[in-house]
Length: 175
Length: 66
Image 1 (cartoon, chains in turn blue, red):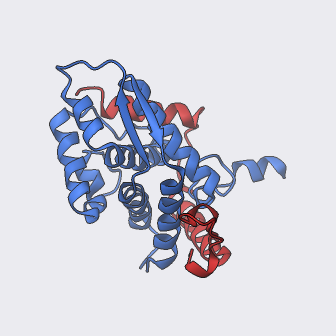
Image 2: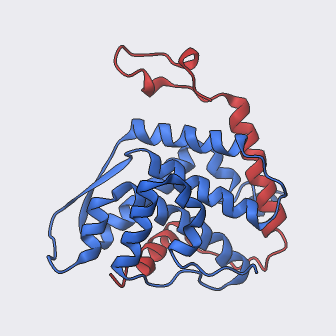
């Protein structure tokens, strides 16, 4: 019984339902921001009040969305909502400790910290669940210009979050 | 939904003590659980050992070619 509960979608770590909890939402954002900071040797600064506002926006969107069907499109919409909610507020900023002047991607991360964190958090959630479903990776390495385009699009229009799969060139198992 | 009525302002922004309406959180949780069941319940269930590590790997993959 207890084992079944642990395996159930609602109780697994990073299950979609667990992300309705503020602590899990915070941990996803923090882990993603830390992963970006570690990847590029940056220092991460977090604004907990903005993170709270992003969480409120995430919950609001989820309860307000009129989902026509509980299918893969609802999952994609949830990932897009997560991205839009994180990108909307200034949750994180990064400062460079050591900066490679030839690295364009670091410039993108420093210029669009929230958008890059939001896209990475959404992609991580997408990759995690699709990976569990298919056993295949969905993400591939992106040139800096593609990341910059995705982040700039999201900075200009939050609706760009709905196109996160195209912007990040994520594979999809659905036709 | 947090609203002015929900907030217990501390004299500055008042944002740090905002409360989220329980019903909205519950609706969100139920919707997410329903998506999980509908989309992923029939999946192969490939185990992911460490979800934090998966996040780090996704970041490294996406931004590794910059």
